[in-house]
Length: 131
Image 1 (tube, rainbow, N blue to C red):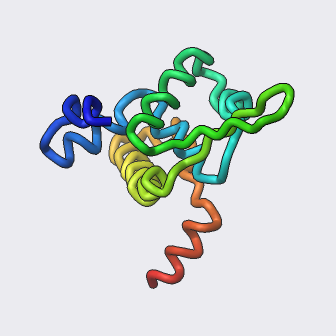
Image 2 (cartoon, rainbow, N blue to C red; image 1 turned 90 degrees about the horizontal axis):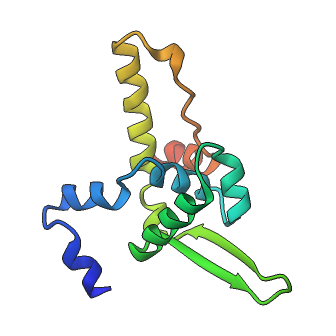
């Protein structure tokens, strides 16, 4: 893990962006917020990603402590990926980015091109408790 931290930027905001940078990491993590998923289940939710890239992104997120990989002693072996507590701590940040993206599209009259941000039941409860 020491080698990994040497490659990460010193500026905290830059470090955070580097850890979640890439076309797919935030989307993969978003799908893992609901709970553990097998590789094929994550791939099914993201038809535009290749299996090679998905595995690569999951490995990088595992190195950064955002995702854990559990191998079950079954035949055939079953592997599940889940968001760690560190990964789950990004949930409100990713939701805020999603909402900002919607605002940006509104400002540019492009909202019709976007999907909705999905607020998970846990997020809705947390939001109510905060109010």
